Amino acid sequence: MLQDKVCVITGGSGSIGLATAQLFVEQGAKVVLVDLSADALATAAATLPADRALTCVADVGDVEQTRAYVDAAVERWGRIDVLFCNAGNAGVIGGIEDYPDDGLDTVFRVHVRGAFLACKYGVPKMAAGSSIIINSSVAGLGGSPGIYAYCTAKHAQIGLMRSLAKELAGKNIRVNSLHPGPIDNAFQTHIEDSFSPLIGGADATALMNQMIPMGRHGKPTEIAKAALFLASDMSTFTTGSMLIADGGFTA
Image 1 (cartoon, rainbow, N blue to C red):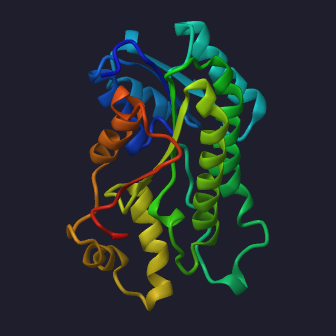
Image 2: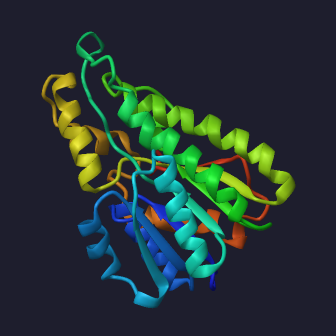
């Protein structure tokens, strides 16, 4: 489905990023993994064919480093066909009265500024038929006590996606957001462990599973399959949309 497509994946060494890269390569793509940690990128790249993977260490909130990974992708393979803005961080979780004044800044830098810069510098390298996927969350569709920075940033990504979708439709570049529910990975475990004190010390993971009609957290590979739909020609008439993959959590 992605034969010889060039796919840039930020947050590429994380569980969802790497699962997506592996699936995209299986479908014939060439992938560019972008992340902060050189060691994590090396570990991720070791699971992929060397002639199909390029790694770039970058802070996605930095203009010059963003331009550098975009340029690296184009220098290696000539263009960008798919841009998966997947880099993320959880930020501070806690009550509003004790929440740090700059608590939103580092989270917005990655989720919102990072996605904005990726699109600003990536779009000129994308041709008609290309796809941009912004990985938001079910946290972008509602609110949660104490998760102020993460929830607010995930809502902001939807506004970015919708604005881009309208601007880029004339160029036949699709822009959509992906909204995973709770996923069985270290990122989600950290959020749930931090959230537990806000609900009286209850087991937040067990509570989440009770709230999900399918009775379990999702798998990174399941989110990768949703990303594949948005990246591929299966979604040629889909833009400005929110694809929710949450086991019924928000139903």
